[in-house]
Length: 213
Image 1: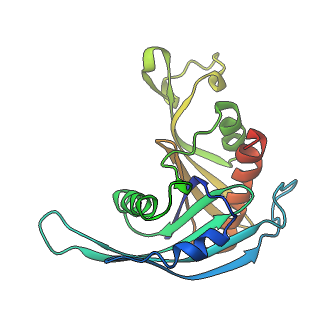
Image 2 (image 1 turned 135 degrees about the vertical axis):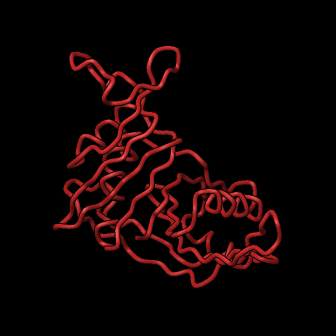
């Protein structure tokens, strides 16, 4: 099952900047096949209908600590109104972090892909409350102590607590979409591209649009 990792960006000049980045290849790292499409809303009250999405491929040779290494190919997408940067990959998180670090290093100072989404607590709760099922939920309590969902007093208002991590399931036309939030990043797992697009749009609507960014 493929996984989509969502990040926030600062990229002036809209997605055309990725056409410039595609020329910034170096030994073991390159961008290619940059295309664009217009995003059509799949969810109700979608605020970014008509935004442009720029997608392409990243090829990356990852060095191994003990020699060898591996070649990684990832699909990426940048959405020019919500400023989300999405990596579609089946590799592990450290490899994704390495790719983002490499992109930030290669690009100019005014282009930045952030490690953390940096979302407001209330808006993240709004997003998660639309899920069909909560599998795991860890909150940050007093003095920074982690509190699992099972440990919470049923009489407490849980939305007063920041979210450390959450694993939830959304549904779209019969497809189950496994979604994980942890360490300020969001990953979406689905084998159906339209279901992934639907989930991304929910996140843009419930979290990104209301932030005023």
